Length: 207
Image (cartoon, rainbow, N blue to C red; front, side, top):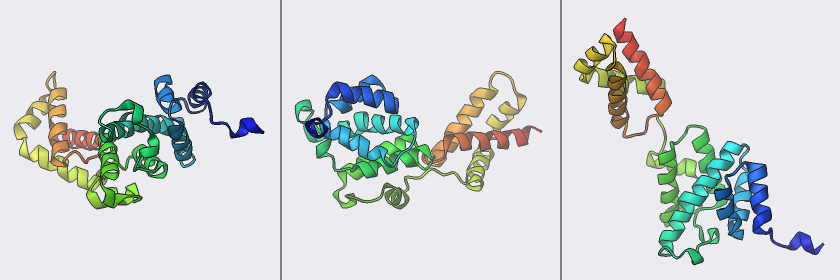
């Protein structure tokens, strides 16, 4: 059948991407207007399972990958296509999977994507391996995070004392200490786990 061999038209692609994968119309429109991006997205989704992952994939493609492509083409939008990408659909899918499983943060995923795109020596390399080699992994180990939090509390006894009194400044102090703990890990701590462990450490000192 001739129709089976025709490329998917943009309007049809937009409908499919929004209905099947839950993409925003703005995301779907960008992808649908680049036939290579449609194939790229579909190929990546063969390794992913949820609408959450589809949304992250679309976001990284539309905002980050196209941003890197624009840099390469001196912001000439007419010349931009995912066909020019030095990052494969498989690599991007792996990066999305790492992000949704808490292996990297959103910021780390963007930095890692840029590294994979710009460093020719990393062509075709597994994002997981590159992340492990370059330190692009969230610190999730409870013992390690507890050690960081305790060292921050030891270094800021006055702030801890204010927290212990409770009242309106307790939340501010908590945020301040969380920021210092995050800085101590160079931003590599898992945010939610760090917050939880810091809270536990503070609570232990208020009993």
